[in-house]
Structure formats: structure tokens, C-alpha cells
Image 1 (cartoon, rainbow, N blue to C red):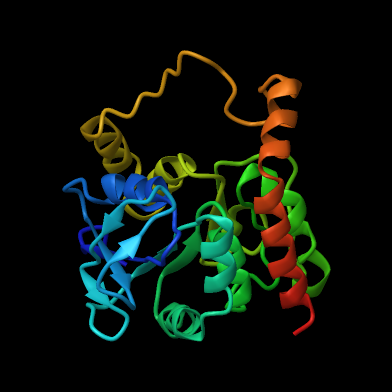
Image 2: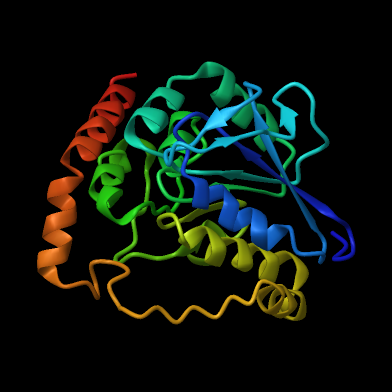
Length: 242
């Protein structure tokens, strides 16, 4: 594959998907260095989990050839309903046949799993839903790594020829997209992209995942997210029965 070829990154949206999951990746791939991000959906307008309306560029039936398939995560109702949306799942299955890379960020991993695209893979997801993803481990022969990786190309740690990738939650979309740029276009292009978007994170606090967050904060967020986890667990249990 030529490093000069413009690669189309298809990001299929659904109601309830998380804005930064696809906006962060869009910002990275939208830098003028060999990628073109497009948004697709089965509807003319999509409402994100932040209650923001966005307009897709293309439909599932009308779009250019997609080189990279990048599935965003979302809220509980959005992800669980999309896990049963055969129009969306069939689009993933069909498109995956001709991509050079296919993957997800955040809870998009559960949608990939529902489409049957995570079998025999190493995968991750949003930090609080890693235990939920582990419920699929035996049936799908999933490997779930320790910790909270922000990007996880299956090819680096499991199957060398695998084109599957997954990522952690929300802001991980930026790191994950940069990793894809690095893998496909090389270090110089990745560095140019990082500088183009001035991505040099220096947060005023250090509580980005449970490995560094105060335990009380982690416990509080887990309590606040009980309904989210219950919805995701129910969706996974339904998938396990199929």
C-alpha cells in the first residue's frame, strides 16, 4: 500500500453515539496528510449522547470506498439498540470485507462484537465496561489486556496479520487515530499531524483512568454509572444467548 494514497476513514454514526469518540478521530484524520474522514448514517440527522445534532456526509448505501472503518462508542441505550440494528451491523460486516483496518473506540467494541468482528481478537473498551466486555471473552475467544490501554491494535500483541483495533474511552479516540496514522503513514506524518492539531495534553489534574484516579472518585463514578452498566450487561447477556 502506497503511503501517498489518500485513505478514506468511514465513521458510521448512530443515535446516542458519543461526540468526542468521532469528533476527536475526525480532527486527527482531517489533518491534510493522507486521510479523509467521512461520517455515515442510516438517518439524515444523528443526535449524540451530548444531545448535539450532527449531519452525516453519506448514507450506508451511498459512499466512497472505505479504507478504514472506525466505530464510535456511545451511551447505554444508543449502543445496546445498535447492537441489534441489522442495518448497521450488516453495513459493518459488508464494509469490513474490503477495509485495511476495522475497529472501534470506547463502547463501540460491543457493536463490533455484535457484528461478529471481534472473534479471536485482543480488545479493550471504556474503563468501566471492561468487566462487561470480559463476559464475551469465552464465547468470542477474546483476550482482554490488563490496565486501560488508550489504543490497542490487535496485530501488535495477538495476530500479526489482524486488521482489528480497539481503543479506550472517549478522548482515547485522538490517541487511537494518531496510532493509525503512525502505522499507515509513518512517524513523520504522525508527528506532523500531532503538531497540526497542537495535541500536547497537559491536564491540570491527573485522574484519567482508575490506575491514577483517587479510589473514591472511581467508586463515585461507578456508582453514578450503574444504570449504564446494567444496560450494557443486559445487551451482552442477550448477545451471549444467540
